[in-house]
Image (cartoon, rainbow, N blue to C red):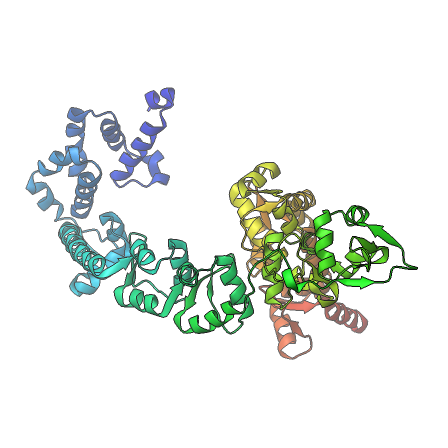
Length: 579
């Protein structure tokens, strides 16, 4: 022992403790271990076999039959190289131990001794009800150790045959994804929506019935396959789906459709035919708005481009749409009022995205679902010179698209985002804690468009940093209200009344939770607190509640029935008055 302590060898120290417990000594009773057992355990750790043989006979003679069988099983299980010490014991040593009264072993103790999990032990007892007893002796230990091993081997063999049959007759996740033309993630989405449910899971790998996979293959068609069939891009297919609200596709976690029902394909083909072709030229669809410019302030093409902060060709495009009036004698001279008030009447995707805090690549898709289309000719998919009429936009469009008014969309468009690991490093917290914060605090505050994103914006990190600096340690609250942590968690945390945050091993409360707790303590009290205030026993307080002389209240998220402090104060005044 001194050698282990001087060398500070943790491995040998742990091995010594395990060897002592192998002889049936609990860890909390090691200090009262006999020298014989301690020397035998030391011999096991330092591989001193001759000394162990001399000590083993002494230990063996002091054991009863049950203890001897337990030691034999443990030694053969954890120290196979010492099995000859057990096999070499004379048989008469066990028979002499039978003369002493046998020691009983509980079912749970026997299960732990044999190293069998609860499920296997329950299966064995259901198959062999004669072995279901309240106590087991040494003979049962020796017999059941062999019987359970045979049962486990038989179960393993039958389970292997069953798994082989399932693997040969079913599709794995990779096979199902190849058959359906989907990714593994998309197949898991089908499982989450109970469309394609696995029959079983073998070593964490799901397996699907062949009939289920074939029925999905005939009932659904992947989006990519349909795009190739119709000769359209995925963006055009999404635009067609946005126009046809009767079709309900299967979408991924980002909201993009990836699977269409076969019965909806005719509707989709009709919707595809209504989509105008993408073209940047208006050709014969020009709508020039010529006017008499006498008495009107005018400007040239270059000046109009400078005022609108855009290219000269874009101004010409706006003119061809009829959004800007031009002179009758020269189409490159414009009414200055139309140029100055252009962005008040109309808006571009870039400006609208800044106002709505959403990225440009999602704008047209979002607006088309709300039946808001661009007025710029045949453009349908957010070209840089697409124009929207502000009068066609709902007044509460901002609150509809982004009710939380978060800036994640703009930060995402500008690539001002960070991963959860980077955010945890900048905030000096653990990655697991950052994941909990993102799940409980950050994502619920976002617009529904961005709740699936796993990244966080710089604005969210800064706001989270302010929240972390304003947190109050739970220990201070416990000290203020004279609570133990156990009673506080039982009353307020376990039922979700408040939600503490844990950082670097310490719990904190937000200021809103502290205010909530403060108002709660002012308004309510428990039965024990009320009995102390009134000087009554808890039995008498329950009698008062039963007689409806005082009302009991239940608060959502609190684990105990409560009394209103105003009622208790009124009863206290009444008591003092009668006294």
